[in-house]
Amino acid sequence: MSSPVICFGQQPCGFYPKRFLVAKITKARRLQREIGGKIVFFYHDSDHDPRETRTTLRHRTTNDPAMLNFTFDNKIQRKFSPLYAKRVSEEWHAKTILQLPNYLDHSLINIFKAVQPTNVADFCLDMYTKMGLLDGIEVVRSGDPALRESACDIEDFYVDVRMEGETVRARRAGDVLKLHEGGNAFIDLPMQEFSKKQVSPARDTRLRWMQSVVHCTHYIAGAGEQEYLHKEEAPEIEFVMRDNVELSDEAFVELDKDLDKNNSQNLKGGVH
Image (cartoon, rainbow, N blue to C red; front, top):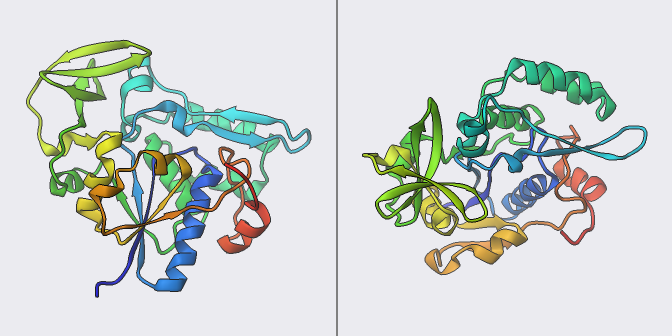
């Protein structure tokens, strides 16, 4: 019998990670201690939604929540570029450093200072790594051209193409590529030649596409994922619910690498 492969998936979810991501990591580590094997983080850095990286921190004096996010060079990049192509400016980095003492202690701020402002996906991943959250965990990225080339063919997908000097993530719809502006509004781009290296899955094809590369035996899922995952397409996977956590959309701002301790003290109890 092959060794277990325990997987969880998440797009970049804040420059300090959301608590629900840490809950997935905690669950995966606990399961690994029970059954062995390895843990794989399917990092969906080809998602393009800028709302995913909103980071909610609590004021150290008032405990009021504040929502911080990256700023972007232009509207096209903000709305349509995949997260691996949304650039992080040095100006934003410097300004955010000045804000952080209102919310965090110096150990966490120093990690932020040490991360280079490159792109959103790299920045978030480097933050999670420097916080000690991904020790011993293999990371595979949906934006990796080599991974894309080795993945299975899917019928519903996005294509990364160029538009006005930016990389954008457009959905294939028949003989056109569509950018969603919001509501019922779309921008149509003419179809162009593309290769598998430019293709990433839509929500309904993500599991099959990911599994064709990761070959996991167990998948840690949140409540939202459980609603749309097509589990019948991967009967070989045992699906496991992540732990429920309070304030699941807020940032996890601890450095203790003992995630079980963090889970019991800081992520305890909840309905999210």
